[in-house]
Image (cartoon, rainbow, N blue to C red):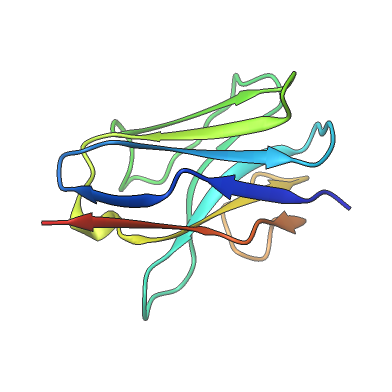
Length: 120
């Protein structure tokens, strides 16, 4: 059972930046990723990264603004979020998955989530 703990959320003005971190409880070769869920909306895929870091798919809405990375020595995955927009406001969830996690049913493990709020 892999436990995932997110950190780094908060309140930021539009155009600003935040970096989310997700620490896994053990070394894992799972594909790691991020989903988000805004109030009244369905949970949606944001980004993912495989163990080598060479495959990093992104949702179209965040391409060019968000960067996912991982440090396998620290069992940690990061999401650098730049040029934030009010529509990025959501709870962000870290996931670990055996397959590329593009749908909410794909991940094997979920973190508890961290809130990101972008003010206009």
